[in-house]
Image (cartoon, rainbow, N blue to C red; front, side, top):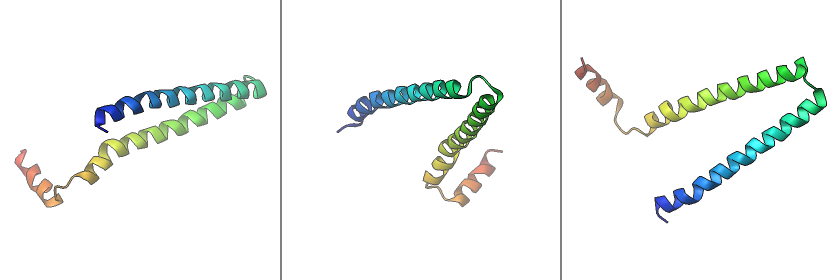
Length: 88
């Protein structure tokens, strides 16, 4: 199967899963607000949840944009070090 066909199959699946997750998150929020009401406890829960998700998103983005390409690079370190001197 070529890569375009794989992409055309996986792209709608990713959208569907994302919509399902958002819907479940909405149901969770509705349940929590119904159980606790609009209180400081629920605000503290949401703040801690957003903080945790933000930290994991930042770390995940850093890993995928910096660490993984660096690990996949086949250029030896001494070659990179030699090329840095050529820039100046």
